[in-house]
Length: 617
Image 1 (tube, helix red, strand yellow):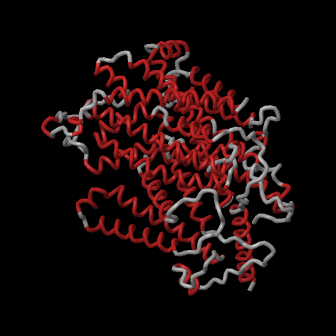
Image 2 (cartoon, rainbow, N blue to C red):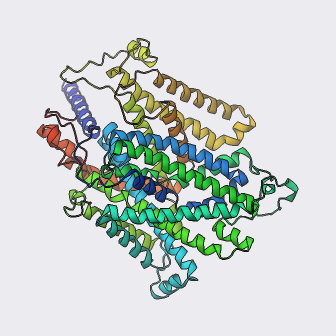
């Protein structure tokens, strides 16, 4: 008897602990606009220049030649087109959230609004890593580019004076990279508008150089380089250059090239982090996201056309294609113009990477999930001063002691995870249940029969119910699993699927059917009638396709990237469970029952300003 009493007590206690843990980890905040604490000084043009500058970086000077020579041939233009379409899908999802939540923090705030505190912390912590690695790798590339222009004078001197004998570190401490990062961080800390003027200048020079390359190169274009016969393709024992023609590596090469080219479009999401400093965020953020992606695609498309029309794809230089092409044409003077553009591109990319980092730290610390002193806003400069300087010190240290290739390997996984989370949040919010004010909360009315009927909305509910919102949550979770199965089949058994092997085709077919059926079931659910300044078209199909592509690209990342990512996440979990969970502003609101209209001084996300007492569960 005592045994059963103890057992029932343990069961009840475990159930209560689970409920409390769920309520803590799923604490959410309202996606409403309110008073801004940062200066609203950025126009739509500033935001577009920020997006173009951070996206159209060193990739335009390297990526086209590399993909053309090794993966896609002249069909690199199609690879860029596919990558641009995938990026636009993610960009549209960011644009809708920019209209919903015009606040600093990017995917962190988006997931906090929609999913819950724990997932939001993971996403925010992940974005901190990605922007740190991104800024460190860009400044390292800038340092090495300038060093090569100086005939290795900088590296030779530092290696002789301060050598570092370690296989896991750089050969010497890159003091120049550290200094550049700190200069950019201080510039951002003492005024956003002034730093965006510099970014606008660098972006303008970069675009002028790209136009120069496209226009000057077009005079030497020859369409024969897109129609090279197979017998004229050089045979090399170390390298297979394909079969010639427009797509020498076939459809598989175009898709692999698109996976690489996709990373050339990463960076536009920094526009969304500036929502609290934009003048009319609901309109300017969607415009800036789409406009910056369009400009970047046109630049990549034009450059890749010119490179492959002027010079055969197998003769491209994958490290520095522009100087090589101009040298081949006998235009040695043009190399210097390209060098100016490359330096400006790196500077604007650096600003695009450094800019959102302190704002995400600011958003998380003012929510209590990171140490609060990091989110304090300077009264004089209206910027998160401490967070900006600390982020700069950490980024500069990484750039100083690690090699470029070590930094680059960690750049992609967090960005793709953030893109997937934002697309998932768009789906959840589009079908969310909005409880009417002053009414008793609707009961779930759950049963197996009702749940099955709700999957196809057989009762034809015109507006979302608690059951329909719960159904969408389950379907979105299942959709992620089906995407993983389907893309795993493509990633591991792609050749077998194309060859028609029964097992591989069956696995792919089952995954495809489940993916399409789940999206169809989501499309049958009643849609929220909330009006937005910008909405993603073709929901749920477009966000669903974005999630599918992102999962596929994540599965292509190497094993060590996942291991390093796991270490970073473990450090973040330690901070959250020992500090963030207990100092969360949402926890204090739930305990104290503070009126929501008085809370925007405690957090960067403003809540309902109607004087109603409300607590967030």
